[in-house]
Image (cartoon, rainbow, N blue to C red; front, side):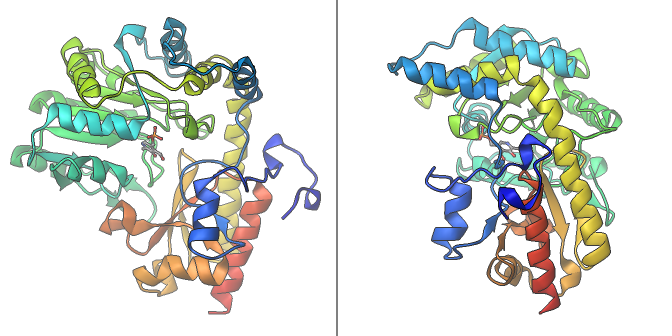
Length: 397
Ligand SMILES: Cc1ncc(COP(=O)(O)O)c(C=O)c1O
């Protein structure tokens, strides 16, 4: 598993040693869980360097050497708006954007700003676990609208959603593209959801952090861009952090075309004490959205090649484990129910017997018991090694 093993054909093949860089992904299984050679494939960052233009912009800023309180310049918001127009065809105005130190903080601000303690918030489960925390840590209630799974692909259960809205929930947190099920929602699915939202006056928080990570044949549709009336009742959460692997720089935005909603968001942000951004995060955000496009266009086929490797390897050599093929994101569910292990033994089996650390499906909701989530944002040789380790562990079970 070193660089000399495979001839380097893509910059993403290069193995970057992350030890000594305080990487949570690497430290947790290796030090905290005590498996020193574990391959970490859990938390959602990639093992790739950020685009050179981002690294250079940061290096220039760091060389300046003074790191006082930053202003967020107009060019920061213009860069994000330009990206959304160019890449996603959404004519967003820079004035709709509000900076936040990450989308998880933004979700917490939103829950507090738009609901009261005890209020229900609808989640389409299984889903990114901090959605639950944002609701429950603020004393609100999760109402589940579970996704439907046909053994291959997840879809929304919109009939169930209608009953859940009637029952109470007026706020829905949508994950689009969806982590962890890997769906890039079809325009039609989103349009039906949008019609329901408009009819029933449902506020939609559309977390689109994975917006750029979409594979061939699929297209991401900005939910708020589907209809003008929908834009008025949607808060879109966006960041370049997944796309360009800069999550540790804690800088994101929400886009809120409705000025009343924007004001309520900003008031809550202020009450939470968030004011200024991170000097380096601001620089990286803008550089990524302005200069990262060519890098991203190389990344996407590389990630898709990793999906193909997983699909082929599992089908040919480990049919007990089924890949829920992702349409986007660098995350995917592995359906491990045929291994016959108890859900609470599954992740431990992968970590301690195979030396590969995944996210336990149950983190995203009980619906994903018996599944794990793999993060395949890594050099292909690392992914191959992980799959071979799993094959050996399963065969020696
Ligand atoms: C759907 C979703 N939202 C938000 C985040 C994290 O956002 P941030 O790092 O900006 O708090 C992630 C990270 O994996 C995610 O998958």
